[in-house]
Length: 287
Ligand code: GLU
Figure 1: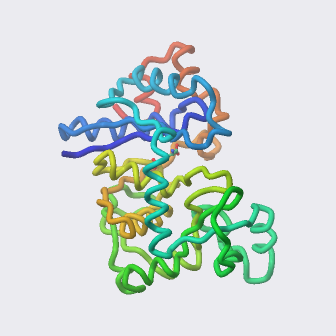
Figure 2: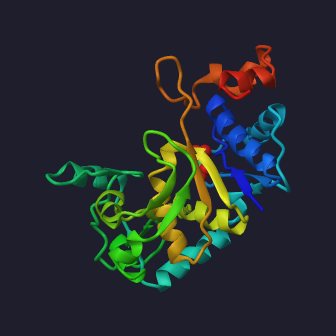
Figure 3: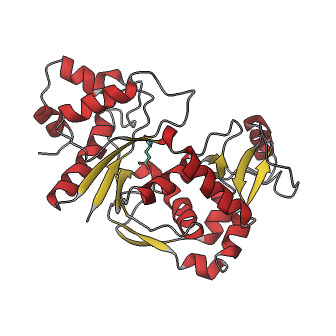
């Protein structure tokens, strides 16, 4: 059965961009007689705002989105992420990292540093061979080159792929295969758990999509590049691979993507201003 999900971070109000994503996924799931799930990506305690998850649920219900079953909060799922991290660690694919953002920015400023991947500046690998003992105050990273070897090498990884149903500047519809050179040279060694112990998005998203039986991921095209990291983690953790639909982002009149600070386009502001759910659909070109 087709199962899609919406996975907002409860760090600000839902705006038209979120509504577009949620409606696309929800409409398609319902048309196929499938399931639609809601998951709160609330791991970042420093950014989560009280009451925001409840407001998101109200806004979604207002535009006609109904989800199946209880809302899954990632903050309740830490043992599952710890188990996945442990599995990768036991396979020798992770390492502890003491670098701060400033250390990484400085290394990136050096000659030959500074490729930009899905997580920003590529990590230069400073701690990869230090053998630091994991512990409080240290991040955990995936050793990308070792991960590729563990999966059988570059040819084996280049044959891994996923089905992309979206289309846009970054995403062609069809079968997308992984580029091992890009993974090493651009994505680098992604963080799997942050220095404060918070599981990273890339790890949590693949663990939860699998645990929830998600077969279709509808989300913005800004996450298209990160999907290669997700596909690699799925292979390392023997997780099922959903299909993906990365859609275009809703922009303002100046062509900038909407941000959480864009209060005028928050669903709650539109509702208070008298807009109807049908108006919201029309604003996004959905009938
Ligand atoms: N929590 C992410 C966001 O709000 C979405 C992640 C996803 O759909 O995979 O942008």
